[in-house]
Image (cartoon, rainbow, N blue to C red; front, side, top):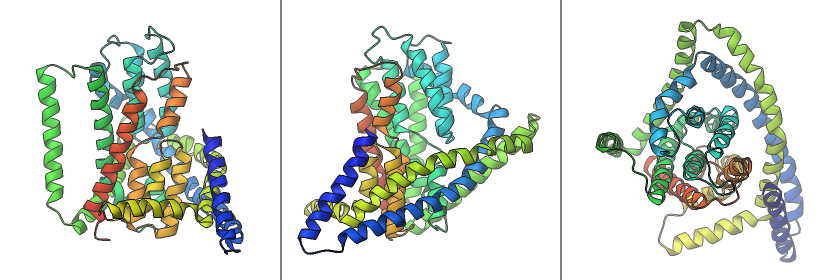
Amino acid sequence: MLNRLWLGLFLSAAVAACARWLGGDPGVFAAIVASLFAMARLSVSVMVLLFGTLTLWLGLLAIAERAQLVQALARALAPLFARLMPEVPAGHPALGLITLNMAANMLGLDNAATPIGLKAMRELQSLNPSQDTASNAQIMFLVLNASSLTLLPVSIFMYRAQQGAQDPTLVFLPILLATSASTLVGLFSVAWVQRLPLGDARSLLGMAGGLLVYALALAGLASLSAAALARLSDLAGNLLLFGVVVAFLLVGAWRRVPVYEAFIDGARQGFDVARDLLPYLVAMLCAVGALRASGALDMLLHLLRWAAQALGWDTRFVAALPTALVKPFSGSAARAMLIETMHHYGVDSFPALTAATMQGSTETTFYVLAVYFGAVGVRRARHAVACALLADLAGVLASIAVCYWFFGGR
């Protein structure tokens, strides 16, 4: 998938460049070469920030793991997943792994979430009567992974900081709302297809109460001005992030974890993670830079902008769509699109803020499908793809709506 996508980006750039050259623009190839070097330099500068931020975050997460915080969150989520997957027996190892995987995703523990998720999928496969066809429980687990409910989108804050944003956490509330929308749509679409009884009357009452609280919170936000919403998002994002740091340290100290030593042990992984990411950043940013310099990306955006204008819509969101279009196929390509959008339009421009929200609203659907189902030999995905893409669409549409709500005056 990535091989074809990466090659396709360069071939599209080549075709567009040849068209411009034949049309009388001899400088297009020089612009592409200059963009390749510029994107390579940008990749290194992004990696430098990643090195510091990942070192800090992985050190803190090591404290959280030793203090059993992730495991505590997993235990709290266990009853919910038992209801969503009724064919999985109570106490089965899969339920513990699933809750641990989702807890890791919520806390932004990407490196820990994937191997745990693969173990969970193997445990679910042990209950699967048809080894080459996805079971209901496997589909629910995969769609929830693809919709990717994340409470702390630290990586997006990190990229915004690297591009010079004064308030890197400005997109905290928009991302939280958009990712909630994608997760709810994914969950309910699977539940509808599988005809899941989501619970007894008491459980449904609790769910209705939770949705009511969510609706009241949205109504409260709706009463605020755009400037007040931006300030609230900035405050909430910074407060939550710093609160998590302090909570990790306090709980670690209370559990008698040697917090400084645990931090150092976890922080040592930061360099390796950042170093391993650099080749992917260079590859994808250079491809996107070539696409931009050749004019191919502008042609696509012009076509989408024309369609939006024909429908009478505001067209500012169109510049953020490249991130959404490649996100289901490749996280690294979407990351490159996001960074390039911030670099091209400005980190706090409306397109950059919308692209950042889209990036945080969903996961790389086809990558998740390939890795999770491929690991257990499942070839027939049934309704997993349709439900996951529906969740993706909900996340993108929610991102656009929320960003017009929060940042429409920019």
